[in-house]
Length: 225
Length: 212
Image 1 (cartoon, chains in turn purple, red):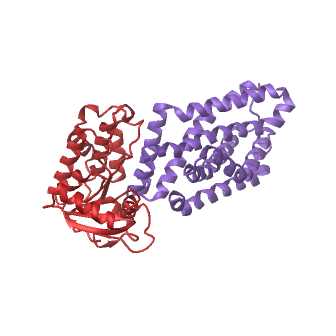
Image 2: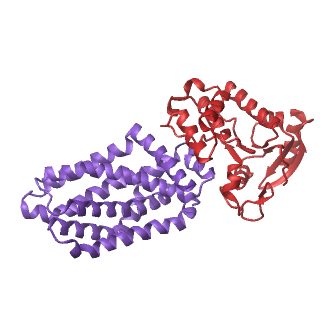
Image 3: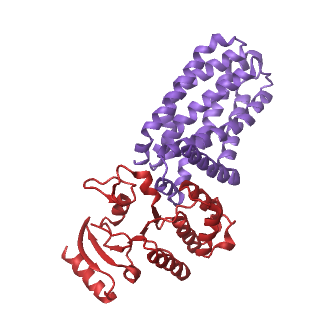
């Protein structure tokens, strides 16, 4: 219970600071919108083309804008050495990790909730398939992205070129997650039944569990780097 | 090295002597490469969370969130330490450092001296038994130095243990029970602080550091 209260306190602190400055969320939003606009110009938005490219465009927009947020989540803690201040408090260090994961997830969810409808408008594309299934895939994909992304952001924050290093180490590890997310999103747009993409959903769920458990074990060592 | 409860110990030493590393080991940020640290009779490697609750740290870095207000910063740290009757305690410590009129201002608008005063409030919000200070006088204005000294005096009167790392001989000497001189990670001199004059300390320091 105390652990959860500490996690909630970290989330509160991060969200208050973020929604006061809108530093991360505005950068992520602008980037996400720009990616969608650029793809809207790059591809001729007609029926079959849109259907074929839209799952990829959506996930490219989500992950590229998400990287901007992840980069800031620990770099901001370097100002005034607040990360050291956090590490001095009587809290298990995994609470810091889970606090950051939840904050990053909320900020990404807000960005996605705004950029996804914009995508449908820009490509003049109505959502085919189940919205609930699409939300489930976006939830699992985003959770997997922020769980491993937050862990690696903590690792790269201690390096000099953290903003360059993070995408380089993160994207190769994201490949299974991206394949699963793009494939299942494509199947939803093709109005396939849930059983047909249930395998991809399981892959996303297993990925999420692994990358929530691994940092739980290793996060102490990452902060000591 | 053994520090008694309620003792005020100042550590002096040239750059690179290992003062900050010693502080990191004592505050459980870094494990020692050899040897062991016991605090209040407990081995630190075994009871880290309970021991961290007893410690407060004031450093030249403030550990404050620039985009939060003074009140929010203290509320955040107070919750991390499970401080009972937190809102009352926040008001108490903020008055102690003379920032009660800036409670709802974002820390980014504070001067260096105000930030350091708030950092003092942050470090004592949970009433720590042991206070560690790493070069706390760096960049402080006279008002902030006076407040810091008042806080230290008040903690000394409450029998709290204080461990100060400083380059400032005068400040280090004024309240110390004991002065320790560290060179290249080793204690080279140790002396009681009470009856020592500033001149004596300077001479002894040069002798200890020079000999090493």
